[in-house]
Length: 418
Image 1 (cartoon, rainbow, N blue to C red):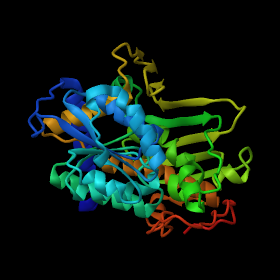
Image 2 (cartoon, rainbow, N blue to C red; image 1 turned 30 degrees about the vertical axis):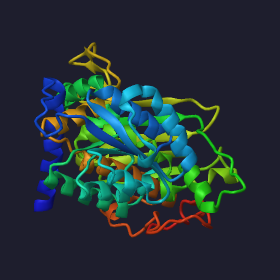
Image 3 (spheres, helix red, strand yellow; image 1 turned 180 degrees about the vertical axis):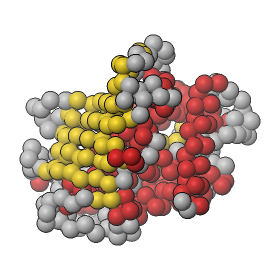
Image 4 (cartoon, helix red, strand yellow; image 1 turned 120 degrees about the vertical axis):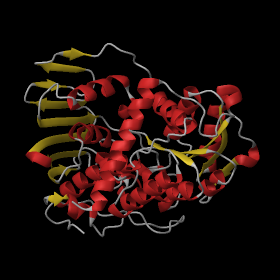
């Protein structure tokens, strides 16, 4: 095994151990130089960004929203109006509220200690690099990229953050949720024996759609409706189903080695829905030949299921709160809001001088989902090495308002792997 593989494994183990230790001990002493008020900047002021800022303010004392930025002024203004309701923890003056393509740079340079990155995921690698280069701690929403090039950038930024002693926590909130943490600990301690299979699901109805306005260029329309364009959103297997795929990676303590899958677009066929699929089904193979089956869909009027199931030689677990088998278990501990707890853990780690760093972990989970998309789009078996070596670049190097053709809808068997 290469030295790179060892360093990656050690990186992930260190981060997981630090998370567990902080959550278990509650030892959140302000040893990291942030005993005074911690100033937070928000980059990406849509619904998730606004909620993440509110979750952050609810998580800890002596924190404030100090600066905000978004590409669109109307989105920025709406979020500012919403966040004013948090009271004195909102401290964003007009000269620290930015919009436009360089808004993220201005937020980072505004005197903040930490940034929340919540723009559409295609922009995440660029924004993470800028934040780490500037010496900022980071909370970043999942997923963290839409293609292999973006994943490699995120991993590089995560490694650089570790060298600088900066914290990175990702929006895979199950990793900070009490019932998942306790159940997964038991799984890893052998409560269900050796894992032999797993199933993960995110099946639900459709999501929002913003009707295109006459003043919107192609690029503005695609960014405002980012979930329907893979260059900026990654498709819903990446944007949404990453949560369940991340749980599979967590249980296996590994990423998948290869993937096959099927998918398509039968329910959401209108032009407003871009070019993404509305359903995916994948078979991931993990080390040891363990097969994890995966389903996700966004189709109105169909059965919904969001869950995980881990099968072992001595029992079965829902990964969240229970085990049935030789070592029956049902979680009866605290049920704190995981969206708040992830910020509690992040800020506690910063103040303790023991920064959490989930950058490589979430990059690998994002890449696992991207590998699933590749398999379903092409109809081919995709290995991890193929996926990481992909030369496909979905996110343009430069984006500006103007014309942009909608990418062709993938056709398995005809769409080529690149």
